[in-house]
Image (tube, rainbow, N blue to C red; front, top):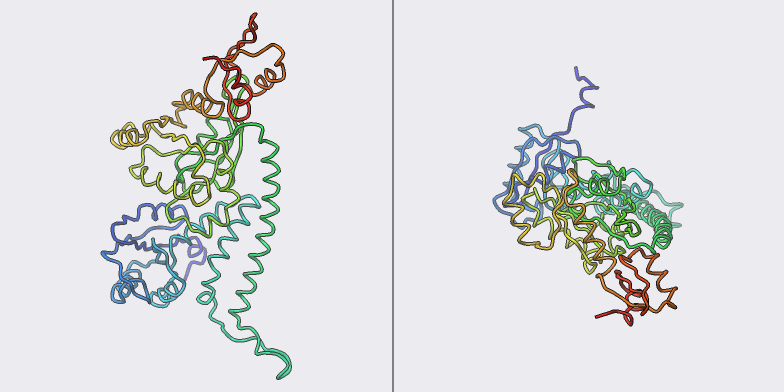
Length: 413
């Protein structure tokens, strides 16, 4: 007799399949985050252009047989599986088959908490599922029309499903547009203060860094995609100056375009930032490849031209893996070494942010009549020294943009 409760609590068993040279370590992390058990990993020796399975039929049958032998509940591929190939694989193996994109979308679905995140994930899921409806619903019968000759033969079930999905996508986009309007209003209200955005690979320690720097309570877990919603907090740099710092969703290689499009408004927090704090896990041997992935996503969302400061995080862990850290320091000589956990390098980080966002230190001699300009400097919080002497007001301060232009006539050599 089947134990129903035990059956319901059983952890799904997955067989992972990857292209040549892929150790499937990252996909394993994603699948474990999803709450599945990885029974076996299989790396292919070669990829073949095959219309039915993407690989040769013999190899496909071999994989399907292996899945049966190890009692896998699903086969997960680390490369994109087109809808037709997905259907063919499921018919061949008799179990659920899907790709890395679906794994990531499912993880996002589990992590979504706010209304915006839930809508964004639903938009990505519907966009991904639209071309796959044929294999999800095999009832292709037509709805009956009206009297004979009065109407056409009606929609097939597939056409009906596709229309309903498109209508849902349209409705969700309208809701997200309203949320984005509110976000823009909030952004305008805080535009007076310089802003930074924490960007980087998933699980690089961005949320931990935000918490350690600002005392925020961002959700932290040693799992992929723990953060889906941007969180903004103020970071004081000295007694009078500060910046707004925003935690953003983590990036990953082959991030589904459906997700990039759906989370565009969230990801765009990075495009509006005055400075990007690009966080790398200095203890991860794949940190350089992860950096390239982050740069590619920043280019996709139009944030590749923003000034950036590279932070080598987790240096407390990297001490045992000195070779990786040495390589990163050679590649990024201007990077700041930090540890969110041990709060290492925070003074250097704040000092560098202050320098980059508030401008270089310069000395000015202003006429005493320029009280409006002096008061503006004080409000900006960038005066380091002020002396009222016979020849004018001697001020040592930092300034950028419009303020720097107004001060330029009074700068001393």
